[in-house]
Length: 90
Image 1 (cartoon, rainbow, N blue to C red):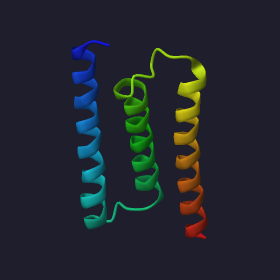
Image 2 (cartoon, one colour; image 1 turned 90 degrees about the vertical axis):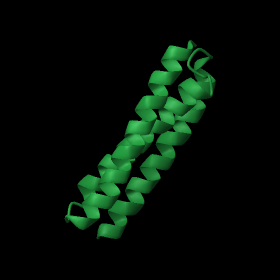
Image 3 (cartoon, rainbow, N blue to C red; image 1 turned 120 degrees about the horizontal axis):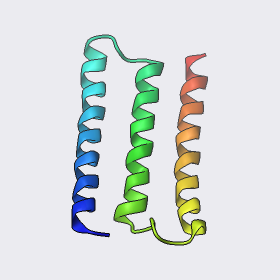
Image 4 (cartoon, rainbow, N blue to C red; image 1 turned 45 degrees about the vertical axis):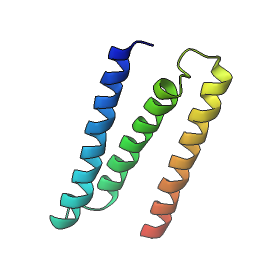
């Protein structure tokens, strides 16, 4: 893993953080909150988690078992949050 790649990933993570901040702050102010905002936030968080697991934890080049374990956990948590939000809308 080279430094340039990690710097690029870091910039993507920072931009994603700013995007979630923008959705949270301006979405609530301008009435853009709701299922679409939640889906966008959850998708951004999943992508951020995937980048951290693969690049900063160094699991991009290891056996599938370890990547699958952590990415599966991330997917499970994301799915449970989405299900909880969906149930709360009813």
